Image (cartoon, rainbow, N blue to C red; front, top):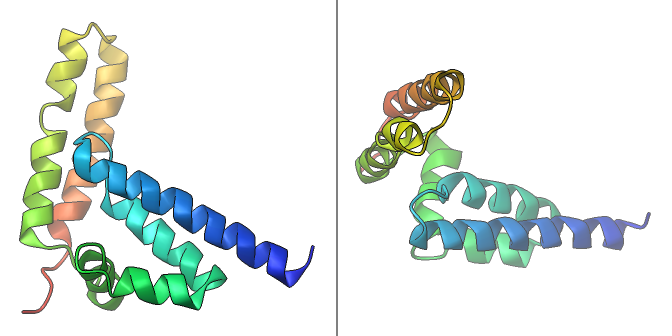
Length: 124
């Protein structure tokens, strides 16, 4: 495989993850920030121009830079993530999911919530 082809694959992956992240802004069940971080990862390997555009974007850039530079998550993003995660187990129960699945889901959600909550806040 040529270097240009591999770079094109990285850019394609970045575009897919960017689209998923953008959809996540509208759909509360689809996480935005992880997809944006994956898009930034791909663009950094495939296109300096796309990477710079993403990092300097007024909406997408700040959470990516906060994570990249400080491992930080904003208070607003933490609260939003927890608000979206909180009703998942009750919703699964109401939809008739088996108890073992709700238990696994709850365990994963608790672990993710603890990870998010323990991330530092970005510097002012």
